[in-house]
Image (tube, rainbow, N blue to C red):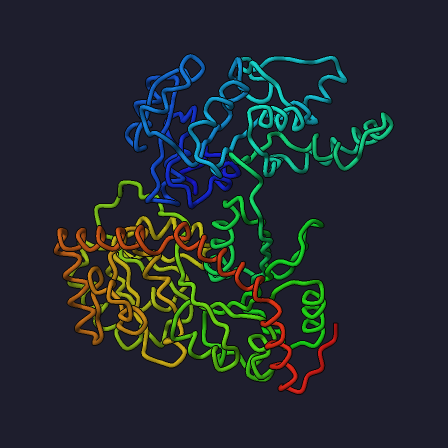
Length: 564
């Protein structure tokens, strides 16, 4: 996300990934719009911008831009579309003379049930309170006291503004950009607030937020479903693919309240009887099992999530796969894996791995094509074909360089006369950034029971990053769509020929990349999957009585007595 460094991530997170027609007032040069379209490629994103130079830049990215003063003519959005389902203000309302009027009139262009998301500076922030105590109110070029600000809001007055304009406020998320400074300042200010009769909880919230991201709806407050998820400690993008990214997509929808964490989870006090997702939690420990029973007793629906062969871990086997028998349902990444899990629990749903956002690719500065290899524990997969890779490397050494992540042995096995770079295990953001600088990726996978349970996520990541793929048929050949844009290779000679083909035939390589990217945009985005996930979780809650009866029966058949 470095490319979107000046995009407000909290504002982006609240724009529903399911939005179809978004209007941003004050779109600037469209950095927010570009970031959103990377998440939801099929959405139409429009902008109204006051400054002509910024509007011209935005027009290169968005689906339509009008250069106009929204206060002088609130009908200008109609030049872009007769209606929208989402309205966005990023640091704009405070610059308007009459934001109440603008919010009121623009609401009429938003479909019933549509959203408005706005970032509003908070005049109650501790830095301003501390300044006032010293008699200071100094206008600045930027920040809370930007001299171009015409209006100032606390959370309460901002909420009242939306309500007066006919919107229903759904939630308000604080942005605390300096948590350590904030805590230090609150030590002095909170006692003063308490001495004046203020509510300490509210005073802390009001003074901590530099800005508020307010989300409202054009109509009644939507019914919400609480979803919580726990993943393993993050390693090489596994938890992000199954927990972080799908939960981020869900979180953007006003009808979902979502929290997630790795290893342990603390629930907000207002969360109740929702869905708890347990990613790769073995649940073989009696203490853990009893804790889960307490959750069930409170009305929660338990869902295990697994995206690898459970037989690979002795703890699953030793517990007789309690992690799948002792929950209400299981979600998996492939139909093959679903067939295995159904032996333990018939309530299995496949959610294919997907990508949250299309990575941005900078123009390459390298004169050579970059060949990427990056995976954990793949020596048994690459060793049988390494001679073909080495041969292709030597034959094309003037045109290529290798980028190897994680696997030092693979890097060292490549000829020393070929340009090559090694990087240790990377977090998912850096991994994706490096991948998007490459041109070709190698995805070897032997045909083993363990590998057959894997998903095609590596292929999808490469396709989204516009990297041409050479891969084994195992896993990657299952979906017919993949036949259109990948090269399959088996023998060392196949790998040698495939690498040479992609290196030497630029038009062929670029055509494959374009088809792969189109496939991901149309079929493998979390923006497409999020509403299906939410509907599935809701169906589990609605059918919970039956699911709980089935769950208890499975546990009793294992000879385990349920402790609530």
